Length: 260
Image 1 (cartoon, helix red, strand yellow):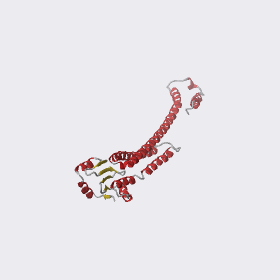
Image 2 (cartoon, rainbow, N blue to C red):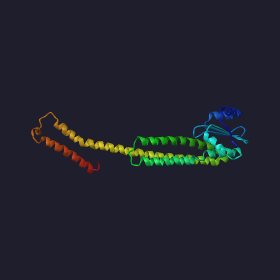
Image 3 (spheres, rainbow, N blue to C red):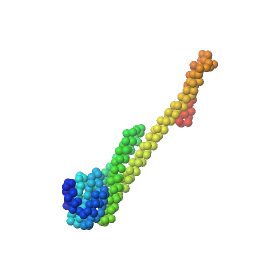
């Protein structure tokens, strides 16, 4: 049965029982897997909830020092009697649901993609959703990257843990694939935003192009000069028809060139 140590006093007393060299490594490193002086296997890491976990496996017992609720819960599901096998079963049980969590994360991104590209115009709310998912994936990627490196070292120390190493290799590859998928969704959404902005700029350009000739006509007839049309009784009608003709003519040209 795995012995659990969760109080600070018990942890301090137990660590004091270890050799000084092992204690130095435990204090200096964040993730580590090494053999102690008495040939015990010492494993330390940060859990997915960012709690510290320290496991010391000797020939006689397996000791777990942590406050992580999920890791503590896994102890009751370990049935082996050999300390090395207890460590293996504990880590396998701890990571048993990870693949399903990653699949759910991937499915949530699929749902988000359908929502983002479901016909509504792109907005800040969509970008916020992508940022939230990106942060979630980043934290998971950092965790699996650390565990992948840790289990590499553990498998080098003892071939019993080769299967555990392969599991975390696959989990790390999975989160990389999910990250790549999210990046693809993000790029497509950004492209959609760029298209919307280009359409808006094109609209304003067309409006400016239509009203530019009218501004010229206004400036021309607004000059402080006596033009011949000023004495003509149809002068106002002439300018009105000229302005309307310019607008309709430009609209016709833009439609013919498929700008509108």
